[in-house]
Image 1 (cartoon, rainbow, N blue to C red):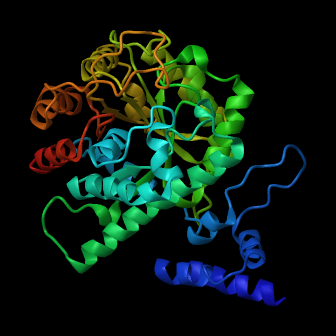
Image 2 (image 1 turned 45 degrees about the vertical axis):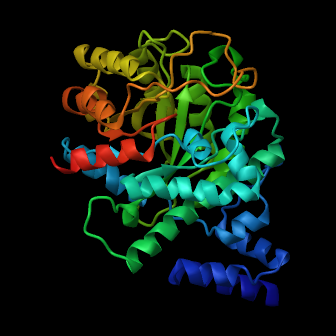
Amino acid sequence: CIMMRRATACFYAYTTCSYSNIVSRARLLTTMEASALRMLLLPSKGGGGQQQVQPPASQQRTSPPRRLGLAVRETFDRLLRNSDDIFLLDGGTGEELFRQGMPDDRKIWSAAAVVDPQYHSILTSVHQSFLAAGSQAITTNSYGIVPGVGFSEEEIATYVAEAGRLARESVSSSCSQQEEHPTTTTESTTTTALVFGSLGPLQESYRPDLILPHEEGVRIYSIMARALQPNVDCFLAETMSSYEESIQAVEAVGTTCSFAEAGAAENKPMMLVSYTLNSKGALRSGELAKDAIQKLLAFAKQHNTLIVGVLFNCSEPEAISITLKQLHDDGDTSFHWEDGILLGAYANRLTPIADDDWTMAESDGPQAMRHNLTPDKYCHQFVSKWVNEYNAQIIGGCCGIEPAHIKYLSEHFSKK
């Protein structure tokens, strides 16, 4: 009874107090008391079947479950009401980690910033650098925490939860700093910054031939989604190389998560889905983007998931321009308005990878960066065209796109 009373007190703090008060109370709980608190906060799954892999209690205690969806719904409803508004993502977390001093591990890549606590401060610095530059959302550094590089299911649950916690704390810390040192410049967007939970390829980027069997992929993505949910506002399946890869993530989120909000018309979890393209503007699998999108939206409706945006990322900006133009010229951006789906893009700055058999672990070193994609050129030659001609409203950057690029975009579009 004492255990339940103390857990209930912490639950009361969650519903009535500030974040710092919640954390201070949660840290006083014993392991058994924390388990009791989770019984109060987490919905019962019931039934039999395979045991679910949960993140450890330490991550769950320090990251109170969030009432997901409301902030995203309000943000994206605003974008749909005003086609001139844009929403600014962050840039490439992995490459920025290396630029700020973390060693480049060719096996687990950016995941090292989560696995090794000595790099947590660099990861936090990267998140906050993008927020200071004007990003309205940051993406969790969970992209590389996958079975393809050797992580077990238990390790995935643990480290993905940690990636979510670090992202959320980065936003909270930036908000606190902004309150202490208010500014009227356009650089400060952290008071409304969102956290997107990254669900990347489980085996290897750009390799549709290496995708896991459907049921296995759904199971792994479910572990990741469950670990991320306490700290994210929306899920982002990114660098999807085929329709099949994307629907594994969609099905996992739809069967694992919900947005339990008072008065909500529906409790479907919200997702952004982003595809990676080859140089001709097709998905890496060779599928046409318009075909994949149409099938994706139909699949999501059948699997309890609300797709709020379709994007293209980790591709040459030229390839993204080809795809967006095709969608626009074919009239297939009608889904953008009729179904309430936003369109977006965030390219990389990498030199093209010509080898179809490329894998990160077998590469000799980091892929070389383009020198002709400076912040001003990225903005004026590509992003402005995506926004003004092809109706893209969610923009940002992937590998090699730095805070300087995001700052330039923020200042450019804030003038309009």
